[in-house]
Length: 236
Image 1 (cartoon, rainbow, N blue to C red):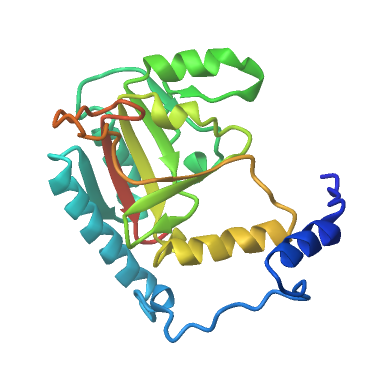
Image 2 (cartoon, helix red, strand yellow; image 1 turned 135 degrees about the vertical axis):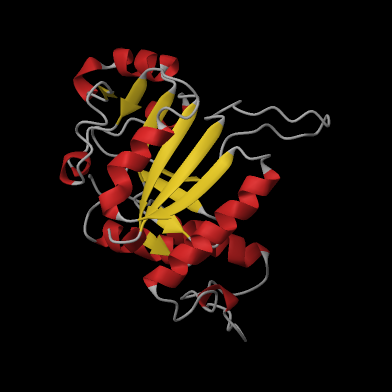
């Protein structure tokens, strides 16, 4: 990526400082914080404990959504069977999945044999397939225990439409991807950036989609799936 240029920065800041009646600051002084609660939440938790917290908070979201969110903690050996069950839970229908080699590694080839696989070269056809899909399947890149949120980081083979256009969604959450909260997720993304990995889009998603109920008439599925199931895999 081409390095950008900042022109006339010092003269601009100097002019503002002059108007404010002070000297131009030479460095940024960060305020001292008496406490950092964002670093204390789930501090010292094991991955298994974080998985339990993710599941617990997903169940809280489930109650608030009228049952449109579900969460299960399973083992890898049960993943294929559970995905198959969830992809038939609300009737048969077209399936769309990422172009992700991990599906094969985890034994999901047979389950997703009839699924349409997102193919970047097909352009608009991907969106049309996602629009008609009854089910979508993805894998969380980073998972937030505090809010039971999954993260989708833009990459080839992982079109965003495959996440928000299907009616129902199954998200596989490897236990190893779970962090306490957004604080740690941003730290991971910062490390990625230092390595030169700068995705075009990063989406933090919590639960199924619903409109704001300003008019006391909440509508589900306005800008995303109506139902969402988390499959937390304890040994991945």
